[in-house]
Length: 281
Length: 280
Image (cartoon, rainbow over all chains, first blue to last red):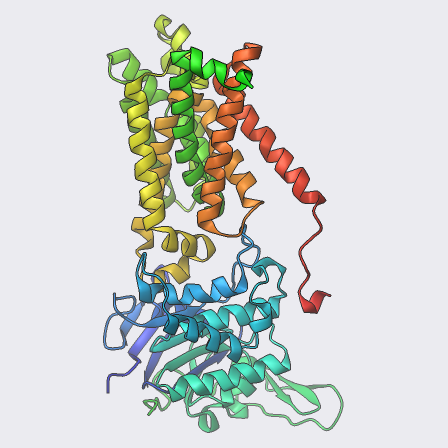
């Protein structure tokens, strides 16, 4: 089976300068890769590279067996920021329906099965009651749900979602996680960029980046306290946050309750090539 | 009621002026909508002024002014593309530089010739009452072309206006589509300056589309409304210019701008739309 995403020693960045490099992974259809890291760690850059919006700096990258951005590659992309204050007071339902346009060409009318996909996506994200609302009158979280529904109703083989849970309330997050399960069940591969460790634990494969690859593997193997501390410098535990000084291993406890301190030895390196890169099967 | 029709029944040049202004309203309504949605108003303004040196050179060497305007528009867009790609400057800086550069060049060329005294006013403010059937035929061709392209490419154009990255990932060739959109703007400006002038065509691009944006939520309706508002402006403007002996092109544009403000004020008086539940 052709992997949805396959890369070898991939470096991504801008103008020839790598933001993060040494990425090796293979993501099969129906599997979910969560890319996790701090701001500026290269998560969005990786998603934009897979989407074909920017070229790789080094290494090889294939998307559904083709070059990224090649015509005929079925990719749906949710960017980090959306046009919420768009000049036209376009309705939420019309925004979702735009997800079906690529399937119908420049002028083809949307068919009944297109409307079914639109309805299903809107139901899944709980936005049916917002269908006739102009996009500009929606809250940030509602707007995010509309764009998520649009991304899903594209019915693409690969979903690239950049911080999909940003602004979502608890109920909407649950809806989103159920939606991701449904997408995997229909055979779609998913790549999400996220700060949310709980969300990443639901994925099949986790890639932790911090301007380098910190860890890559199944959630249980990748999301260890040591790798999280390496990437974030902070490990959040129930009842408080423990800050790890990345240079000295000092611990500063914040918040109530007994601290659960997870540090890492200074100089500990999970860098490129120093980790497993399971092939997401 | 004859007062509303007499000028167009009695006078052949007023008939031609009305037909020409209606065609300009159609093209500028459609293209102006794309410009407004895409946030390209400044480029449209710069393009409208940037055609000046091309027109001046064409008149000096005896070519049709439309050809000179096309060359000026092409030079303007090429210059913007080169500055944007070869430097780290943003496109608005490039547009601004080309805008004042081309305008200055036009004034310098005109100042070197004593034959321009009459033509300069026509170039800047139009000569709608002297428009020929040849010019009208050219405007009709441009109107048909831009309406056809806007209908054909309405989906990628709207997606590009909302999120160019989404449009690119969806498989649309955004670079090519942007070039087509710029070409539509340039053609419309060139076809319209004969009627309303290089200085005033910007008003026809912006005012009807701006008013239409306040009244609708659909792209096609916005284009149709903008064209209708432009046509209404053309009719009222020509009528006013006939009876009050006003400059025709400027009166048409002034009417369009006035309609925009009337719509904006009326819309501000209408109760706001129902807030979403989280804001209620």
